[in-house]
Amino acid sequence: MIATTPPPPYYAVIFSSLRTEGDHGYGEAANRMLELAREQPGFLGVESARENGLGITVSYWSSEAAILAWKQQAEHRAVREQGRSTWYSAFQARVCKVERAYAFGAV
Image (cartoon, rainbow, N blue to C red):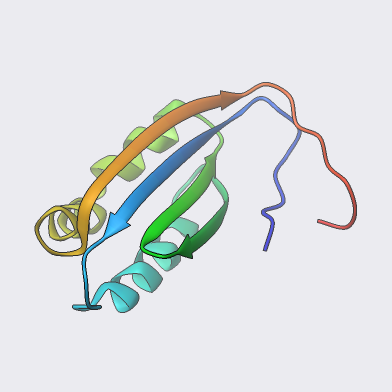
């Protein structure tokens, strides 16, 4: 599903990852993180896709302060550590300011 976002400016966190073999609780944790992110002030939406071990998740936020607060959230911090030790062989996070946005069709 394509996230519905407000008019720019806003921020995007692009999280690209390579998964290790097996679930090891990943699915449950990913669902919990989405639920928790939706409760965070400044969260605007998320889009995610995974194929052949490569995952790309883009989360949208109202401000850099909202992103930092999410990064510091205790449960999220613990799950990130489990990601490093169990679920990912590699990942990269990028923070971007969205200055323009274009759409086509019903989003």
